[in-house]
Image 1 (cartoon, rainbow, N blue to C red):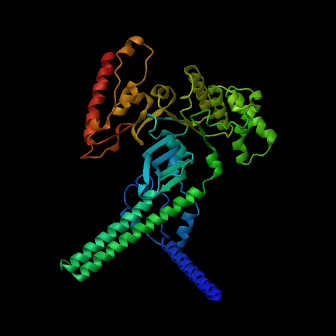
Image 2 (image 1 turned 120 degrees about the vertical axis):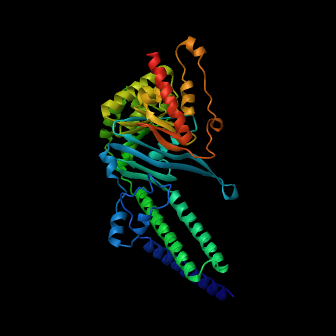
Image 3 (image 1 turned 90 degrees about the vertical axis):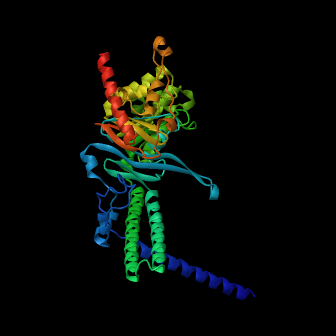
Length: 467
């Protein structure tokens, strides 16, 4: 009995091995079939990724190994960003979080289709209420989260991308093909089309489905390649100042260990040199060398935030993400931190993404401002332009919440409550992100665009009369 049982187990093991080998061979064949020619300048997965592949793209499907090897051996790079001095480009960023499992599994759309660009030396402000997705956007840029969909470019190099849209395109292309196949079979059965016409249309639909799948599979492979081959030296140039100066510092580590941890991770092992760089960073943010041997609980909130800034500066960054660096601080300390960041920006020639919910602070500190609501950017303009022509109802709501240091006018200040259901009617036409003035973008449909243009004229007349 035991011998028969052992023989049966060996046969089952051998059978499972054959199945695995057959599966691997099938996967290998699929990989070979998906060797397609995707142009390095193709923007279908970035700027226009919400549309199916173009006809030209589908016509160019080929299996030339030489071209494929050249594409797959390098991460995606866009020279036009470098030529236009764009240090960071976020294209159709989506960040979803999934909870639960099985039938009860659901997703939270923290960031949905966010796009913006930051030029070298520019301070770009991202404002909105708590929970609108500002911090999630910053954390996605620095790769603390795996991106769901979209692409992020730093200095022309793609440092992050998500493949959810590409996977869905494959899925729904196959569904549409199966529906078309059923319709053609039904039409043939009812003698609505001939056998030749049926075969011709079925062949065309099959070719289109196969080509779309090949294109998207190649893009998914390129996305995975880019995510796994990001240059660490490039990512070292992007640093983040976190929102909470208490939770972002390890209470069990000394200040020197906290600040030098990034240096050690990047391979800097010389203790004397690391100590010197830590001391320089502390002195640059207004702290002294003696603080290096202390623990975070021994400092005030403002000092803790300075330690967080020193931790970012010690890596010699080129792009700094400031995630509400002053929200947990007193008013007097806020001014010190803002002035410190201003000085560091000029001294180190930093580009910044400044995340905040206070428009008055952002106006003083940032060159351009993007207003974010419910995971989407609803308005984007220069600082002066946004305060001169606030158009979107949510922007007006944020501006009305800014307190003024005048008790007489403060009594009469009207606070605007934003209710999207009352303000917008998108049942007929969905909104698009349009440029209503040079450099001034707003999320609106055609009816709202005409309305906002009239508001601009009225605001200009009002400003002229007040002068």
